[in-house]
Length: 80
Image (cartoon, rainbow, N blue to C red; front, side, top):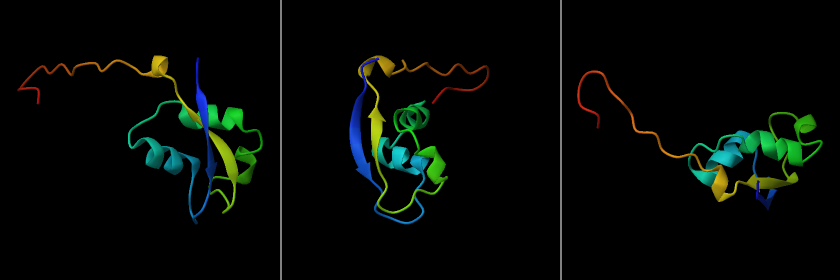
């Protein structure tokens, strides 16, 4: 896996790691939260709501982590 890292500083109240990942990618990013927690020991110990000023490295997945889009198969009706 060729992943890169982006330095993130929590600058607001009520941010969770999942919310930061969603705001960064604007789409589902499978395993990014888990890989970020593995890469930053002690981040999980801060609790679900990250304190203001917390600095960590967010995992940016490489292109090989992208999953192919699987077309939806429908038994009835028209696929849209």
